[in-house]
Amino acid sequence: MRLQWVFSSLAKQHGCTVTPDVSDGQLDREERKLASRLDELAKLHLTGIPSHVFVRFSFKQSRVLALKLFGGDVESEEEEEMASSEESDLEWEGEDEESTEEDKHWAAALAFYKSGNMSERADKRKRGTRSLTEMSKMYRFIRGEKEMRLLREYASSGIAPKSRTTRLKELSEAFRDVVFDMMDHGLPLHDTDLRTLAIRENQKQNLVKNFKASSWWVHHWKRRYGVSSRKVTKFVTRKHKVDKTKQKEIEDKFVQEIKAYMAANPSSVVLNYDQTGVQKELRSQRTLARKGEKKVEVLASSSSALTHSHTLMPGIDHTGGINKTLFVQTAEPSGKFPTKMPPVPDNIYLTCGTSHIMGYKTMEEFFAHVAFKDLPQECLLLLDSWGCFRKHSEITKHFPPGHSIEIKNIPAGATSRIQPLDMAFNRQLKVVIRRIHDHAIIAHADTFSVAKRENSMKIFSQIHWAFCHSRFIPNRVFAFYKCGYIDICPPRSPSYTEVLFGEGTKGFCSSYACRAAGFVMCVYCEKPYCFLCYFQNMHRCC
Image 1: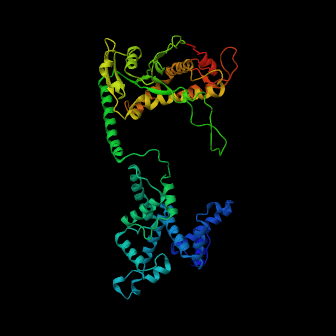
Image 2: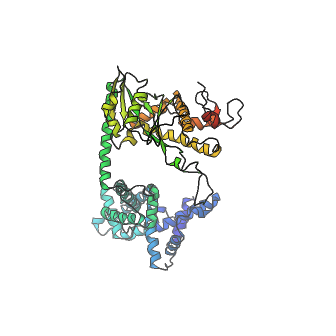
Image 3: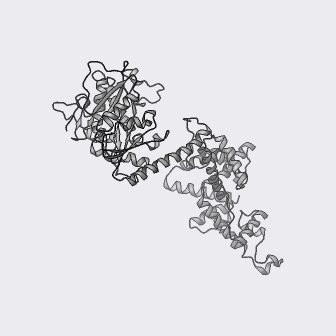
């Protein structure tokens, strides 16, 4: 290690003239690294930033490197191997800047190599070039015949030899493609697998000599390409992965069919109906708790209400329209309502069965009394592939006279991706219901039970009344855009939750003589109302 050359080069970088006059290109790799570290520490000292914040090597790596630079001995072979492998892999982080510097050094070395005096050459075949001894004295990265051979190849081809940094970058990018392809095929991967695969890929590409895929390299490769350990949420068979590709093709074909129908029938309206189950007590799965608590328990008004559900059947169309009546099916042990029953809100059609799941009987009831009310003259009915909806003959008999209606069933397994209600309506509806149920448990558990049928219908009625407001038209159009049925994205509109529970709820309830805190904003009069005034008393301003 030529410390005098290192400090001379460092002084020259800062505008000082010293002897000997040494440029950065005349230093070997270890000397350049030491000069770079000293320069970095000097700058940190001037700025007042603690130098330990920017230390790039671990303690062991710094110690081993220092021992090598200043002539010491490494205590163990294991420590030396770790340092050499991780130190060599460390070059990958430098990338473009270091690669450009390497190219400059090779260009300077080539110019010096060609600057030899022809009269001093005894061997006329090598006239105009310098010897290995001269080159190694001037450029310490040229250590033997291998570097001289690379230099001569550079002179003939004009292509600079690739630095180790460049080769490590190429290896990392090639390895990324290999790993991502394995992820797409559902193969399990761990750090030990990455190390084995990286070494195998390097052997295949023959890029980096003595590459060991150290734990340091694996860690920084993962960080660079956004790879981390994740919990497995589902195990699937190879057949499922193959079927997934076929399923995507079926979905794309169906979407194109609907778009072709809409282009051929511009006056027709595409209408989507879908069932969605809502628990009688729909609760959030998260809550605030003290840090470090292992067991978090949350109060529920009824255990059965957490497992029993209602079925809602909303309907929207691609122009932003919505069915004004919400179909609701609930479960009764006898399949019939009791003789005495509280009144049902006017925008709710309530029916029942032995289960909350719709059957043929309640399906006919839905199409006879709800689905075809206020229907446009021409429409395309989008339904999922549930068994009852595939019986088109049972549906067509309820068509109103003078209407042209077509029915299309969304392919099985595709509703989560190409059914508008699933994409951008049902989930938002449940978010609003969950917010209401959570608040009722916190503030009104003794006076308002959300699991009671009467109270559930009040909540559904008020939410559906709010959702029918014209300010939510872009939200409903967006559901069809997200599925791919329309190409023009509607203007950005606040979500249902942002409107109902956002800034408009600040202040006190707007009802006469009520001084409770506002909980929800009425979208029609744009005033805040407390929970009881809006839901229990069913506020209606229009």
